[in-house]
Amino acid sequence: MGAMDPQGLIARLESGPALLRGALAGITEDELRWSPAEGAWSALEVACHLLDEEREDFRVRLRLLLEEPDAEWPPIDPPRWAKERGYADRDLKPTLKEFEKERAASVAWLRGLDFDPDRRKVHPKFGAMTAGSLLGAWAAHDVLHLRQLAKLRYLYVKRLADPHDIGYAGEL
Image (cartoon, rainbow, N blue to C red; front, side, top):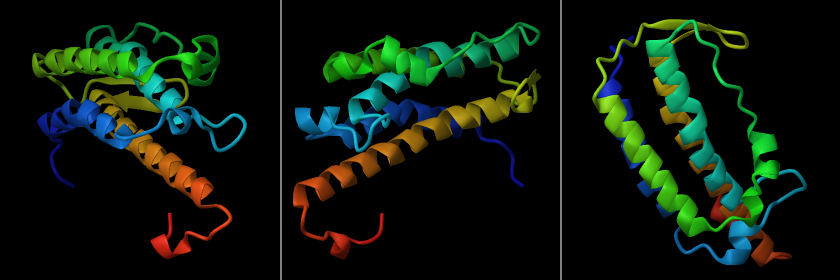
C-alpha cells in the first residue's frame, strides 16, 4: 500500500468542472432532459446533483470531521432533493457555472488545510471514516457520475439508432 496523495485528490477535484463540461459538450436540450427509465436521472439531474453535493455533502462533512468530529452531520437525501428542488426544470448553464464556483471554493479551502487524513468519525452507516477516506470518496464521486453521464449518452445514441443494432460500437 502506498501513501495517500491528498494533493493528487485535490487536483482531481479541481478538474471536475472541466470534466463535467466535457461530458456534456454538444448535448441537445432533448438529450439533456431525457431519462432512460422512470425514476432514473437525466444528464441535467446528474449535474444538479453534483452541485448540491458540493454545497451540502462532501465539503460540509469533511469540514465537520476535521473541525467538529462530534457534531452530527446534516442529513442528505439526493433522490428527494431531485424532486423537491426541481432538478428536471433547471437550466444547465447556470448550474454548471454555480458548480464551478462552489468547486473552486472547495479546492481553495482544501489547499489551505493542514490536512490530517487519519482524523476519524464514526458514521452510523459506514462505521469509522477517516478524513482521507472522505476526501477519496469525494474525488471518486465525480468519476462515478462521469461514468453515469457516459452511459446516459450511450443509451441516447442507442435510442436514436433504434431499431438498428449498435453492438458494433463495443460493449458498454
